[in-house]
Length: 202
Image (cartoon, rainbow, N blue to C red; front, side, top):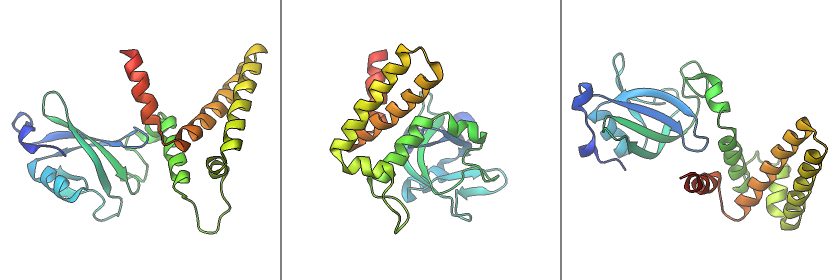
């Protein structure tokens, strides 16, 4: 967790900027400020607290229930901004939207949202009494999972041979979905893929 002694509160007159980011999707949820007291409460409780000019010390979701559970707190290079990766119990914005930056911010990380949904299905998530979803069927049947993965790859190759742009895009989407299900089945997540791509890019 964040070492408060390394935070530069003086630079911002006692405040630091906090960027709250969805830990699963990577979408930016909101930007707020925090002082030492707010960050102390955050570290101690594991839920985000902020400092507002109008509210004073503010426990996010303390009234609405839309709390933000802390996954990690990371200080920037200047020590005056904090990236808070969180799991949000509900909308981050007071307008009722997931992000204060409109839904475009959430849609921008579609892979993260897909990854989170597959993870939920892998954990058995779903309404009580519901039939297993297609994702759960794939996760529970190795042969079906691998068969569909191969089929989607062939269908993509065929669309590319035919020069069919629209169908190729659809087949890429299908292949990505089945590949991510296969990845989760062996214990992986989209973060593993990001790390591999980041290493290759460098």
